[in-house]
Amino acid sequence: MEKQLFELMTKMYNEIQEMKENMATKEDVKSIKQDIVKLEHKIDEKLEALFDAREVGIDKDAEISTSLQRVETKVDKLELRVLRNNINLPSTNEN
Image: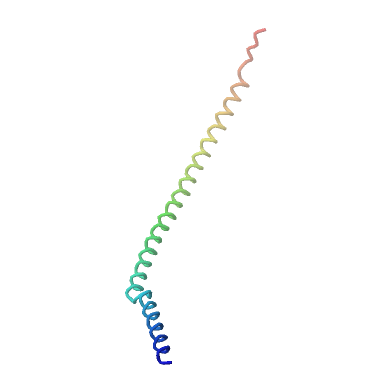
């Protein structure tokens, strides 16, 4: 009985030692937390850059839209001029 108990205790001890080897230490956890903080900081910077780029894109789209409206207005005016000039021109039918 003592031998079985000793073997069981030895087996449990070995398993506990193996578990301890696989466990993270306080230093490991601290290091992981620091790494997480660094990654969060990098992600925050990149997200901020993405939002800034998005704002620039929105502003650029607004500028392009305004420019397009001006061009369309000019084209409309020119079209009206051409139509007026065509109406005022005598027809030149050579029959």
